[in-house]
Length: 80
Image 1: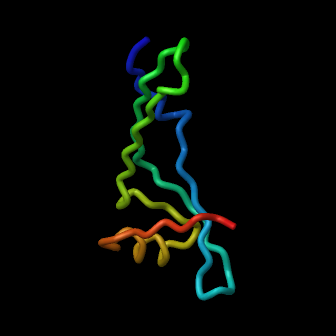
Image 2: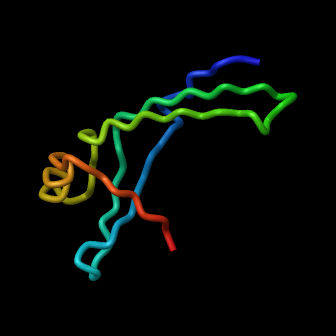
C-alpha cells in the first residue's frame, strides 16, 4: 500500500544492560527515525527500517551517558 514514516513521538528505542554484572543501566536513544513498507493484503512482506543515532544515547547517569555516547561500536546481545 505504501511507505510510511513512523511518528517519532510514538517511536522509542529503549535498553537495559548489565554493568559489571551488578547493576542494570537503563536508557534510550533520543534520535530515532523509522519507515515501514506496508501492504495490508500481504503483511508477511512488511518491511521496517529503523535508524538509530547512537550518539543520542541517554541514561539516568550522566557519566554513563558520556561514556556510551563516545563508543565506536555496539554489539547488541539477545535478552534472556
